[in-house]
Every structure is written in structure tokens, then in C-alpha cells.
Length: 130
Image: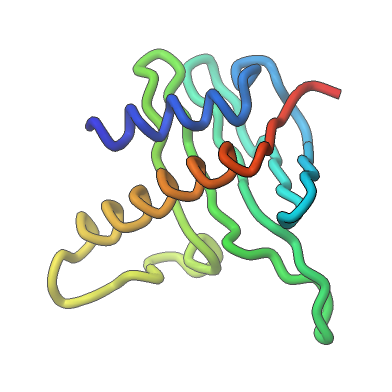
């Protein structure tokens, strides 16, 4: 649970008004890709959001790493629900392996989230209400 607590603290540094925000936002800092944040779902105790970079490519716009994150406001926890195309294909996971299964995949996604949130903050990204 300490990883999920750390994710929440880092997410709150990136999105200080997480409890209030609704809609789509983006952060632009020199020397890094534009960060896009979209609130996907909100309930009394949770906020589900999409964090992604969007790139222009020859085949069109690409969203990567395209991570869905759920924040548990009452418990002050945040977890990565999916990474990449895994949220689009039910039952699949980017990290499926014979060892570790779903628990291992969840752990890896959340370590990535933790490190990415730290990186975003170090780069100066900040999501505030418009």
C-alpha cells in the first residue's frame, strides 16, 4: 500500500485540485512533451483520469504512455488501472507473464506510475484549473 500512497502524494503535487477538477487539461514545459490529463470519471470518493503524452507521427496522433489512474480520495491512494492499449482490450495486459500474473502486472504498472509522476514534477508539470 505504500506504493499507492506515494502515487497519491505525487499525483496531488501534479494535480493539486484533483478533488475539484473536471474535463481536459494540459501542461506545457520547455524541454518536455506536453502532458494531457482528462478526468474520465468522478464519484464521491474516487477520480479516474487519463494521463498521456500525445505525439504527432506519420500515421497520425499517438498517445503514449496513455495511463488510466484511479485516485481514492478518502484513502489517499492512487493506482494505475491500465497502461497503453491494455484498457481497450478486455482481459489483456501489457505485462502478462507466467510469473507474477495480475499482481505482478499491477505492481509494475504502479512502479511506472510512481516514477513517471516523479519525473513530471521534476520537469515542472503542473495541472491547475483554467
